[in-house]
View 1 (cartoon, helix red, strand yellow):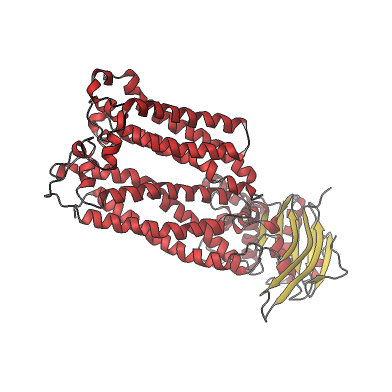
View 2: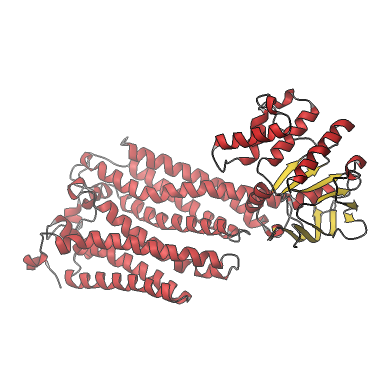
Length: 341
Length: 230
């Protein structure tokens, strides 16, 4: 195994989180069977104390899981010089068949963990902790997911062979290839630009409706548009945003932008996209919880902050992705052969 | 004026629906006004301590309402009960419940953790209380080196450190001789003059016959004798 601080931190951190989730999972089973807030028994009070302690610890553990998505990307980008043929994180992810699965699971856990942290935050606002059963049931779903992540990460990092020649972004994100990456690369630029800016306008515009109207419909719509915007944006990064950042008509890699040559712009750019999507999803996901009488006012207060945060993160992403298009020296129109559609 | 403490039909059942089920409190309704000094008297097992522990947010009743100020504490989770307990109540226990092998001052500051303000300010407040109770020269002594009366004073200082609105004393004279008991009642009189509401559970006649006491409520078998504590 490559002994890199990032790899050790990822493995040790995920293992620690998994152990904490196993303990919390045991408590979750007890809570699902024995929790009765109406009861005044000593057992119930002890459970309440334990759940508060356990959920506080799990909260921080899942904070690590959220952060670890970026640590993973940083680490695989950092070790790419060790691999023959690798120019960026793409090469390292490609060097072992599990690389892309680890990334996919980590993205899934990023959102799942953040949703749990938000659920825990809401539960702690109400004096009768009405979400305790739900949030601990959620941990029973999260624990196996983190277990899978730990297993995949371990097998992936143990299986990295520097002497094996790997293919990198040049071949993977090429229209001549096949697969999802090639399909995204081959997307026509002009229609993708249109889709990207229309999706962003709809998403940001729906936030205005959320502030004007109290109906749950608009919050759900806002969240759905956040998901649409996320998917369109990921495709857009590969399709045309990367071209403007690299100032090359053929280079579509979504990972090179994490490198020093490009001012590490990938970190704030993806932070804006993932943060905007996450805070965009939250208001819609938690609409059903407004039926809980002790939570309704808290959700109403908090969701406004979530919408504001979604707007701020999305604007960060929009500015960083549009800046080279509007103000950069590169003009894609000068390369008509490379513009599809 | 609204009472500071109001209990409505409070019941507390231990080991509910089990063979050893025990009804410690049964349909308790009472109210206590701001600044009142109220004694709950009755024999052992009459429910005095259980009632004080419920009013003091150390547990939740099986049924009924307990309103402290404007808040129904019977419906709060343990975490919020802890917050109300820390901000509203000071406790004086029968056994003193001091932490051995730490100093007098450290014992007094314990209910403040996590400290709401700076440590120096808290120490200053602790020293002022020790001075009020004539214990200023003993602040660095370990509590296990103190006499029973001195330990009781430390317990009182600890009960007052968070400037509580309500002081709860459970059998405060149980381990004191008559002279120390009289001293304690003198201190409670001073606390009452500070505008605090005081609830005392006792079966000591020296306490419930003392002129400091505004009202006495008799309890037996988990019920208020005469039916009402209003």
